[in-house]
Length: 462
Image (tube, rainbow, N blue to C red):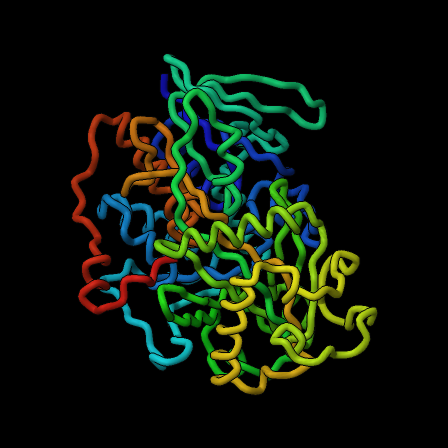
């Protein structure tokens, strides 16, 4: 039997389907959310789920090396190049320029005592272009792609993987047998997979915790007015802890998006001009810092994990200054959606003390470099979540050891972003095709890790 189950209809899952379809291998793709044409751009509950995933309604940035560095460390160099070519040719066809495959790593630039600037190429794809990309990845009238079909259980049997799913809106439960699984369940997937995969349980490993805030300020201030990159990445290294900007949005909006596992803030710039810019600021707790990150994550889940609200607080207050305005002030006229999800709250008191200390330290360093951000008009918003700690344990080919289970996109835990999701999905699809063809291409390894160690900068992943 050769039939592959893909769980998740975002860029990674669709990338896997695209490769399997080219190889002539049968598959079914299950997605909990609605079909592409049924999704609405102005509904928070449809921004994170549905065919196209969160990537369809994201800020539309297609970023390239050294963004998503972990993608370029995958085990089979020839396959990686083939997948990169397949995806970038597709992007070029719909009008989104893409560079050739990188030949060597690029170092960070900037001050050793403050935030460093990680520069990389990034192209904007409009919403119509992203819709067309999803349509092409799906193929013409492919009934193997199943929206409104959440998977509820996976069991390993001697014949393969028994996948149980629910057809909506009827609620009817069905079961199918598959030879291989592709997990493309997104940023929260690691936590959900603990309950989803049984007999035996899926092996998970603690990789990184990233939880922080989004910061919004009037246009024309801070690094977004001085640095011209389409997607600005700043990184502060210190004492084994990185603090990073994420998803920078000029003249954009902040959306509060619900997920089954919780809710999180996201920025985007493809709506009406707002007069405000926003970005994420998140400490990364990994390696020896995982224990600290685990405590912060557990504190968040225990105290705020069930909250369906987002909190805002003026920056001077978050940094321990005097209150700005009355505690019961109405929310400012800001581009926050949905409006009724945002409430004023003492974020500095709600979060774990070690997260507060890390964020304050990062903010003081940022304000030292960009002092015009230090204003009551600069607002902190919470929560921003990009790493939930546990991710499936996979090898250099994104395969779970001893199982025919593969991971791609955010759930792999090694990279973030649209391009890594698309390429890693295609890579996994090609790996499965090669397995059934009876051979694995002998490509040269892309050993950027050694190059980074030689340069003394071995923390550039993601």
